[in-house]
Length: 114
Length: 112
Image 1: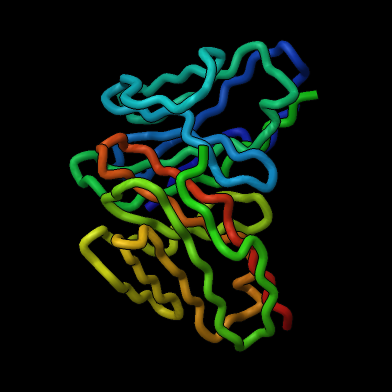
Image 2: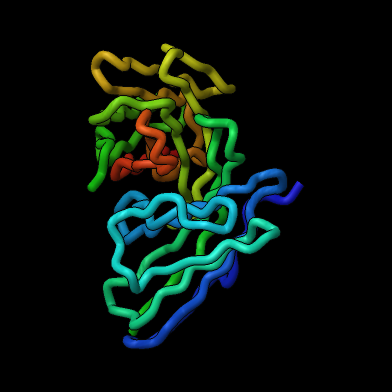
């Protein structure tokens, strides 16, 4: 049973560019959340997708957008990259309908903006 | 903003000793989860404790939850060098917002 997978593992971009990160949830999970983790900090919630719609959003600008596909996989897009967007981006999945159950995280994508 | 705060921020112990980490939070919760992170990699789920539970065990892990004090503790018994990692608590708020709110973590070093 595959867990949460993310791609790519590492990514280097320059300021102003755009980036797309990908996530496949754990088998049986239908809800995907994205988190940003700056160095030395705890993860910060970006947004969550369920039934291909954004259900909840954290305090992130519109440069951060996402998408969920019918197979429950998800993409995170960041436009007009800033140096401050350099971070580890984590994807987490859960099974909606089981409120309070565990959320499982992927290995993350390390984004470096130069 | 961070909901939870872990204490201490860093902890160094000898192999075989017990390690205790504490977490405080601000709002009512459905559950609280503890995660481990090695060297900036992905988060590994350790244990979930629901708001109506007071204590939970999993192997060498013991978690307590005090909702009246809005706090939780994670105890790792008989620590090993492989337990060296950062540990985070994350709360699943009772407002059905579906998001986890993390603290800033405790960095644990277990010396061989």
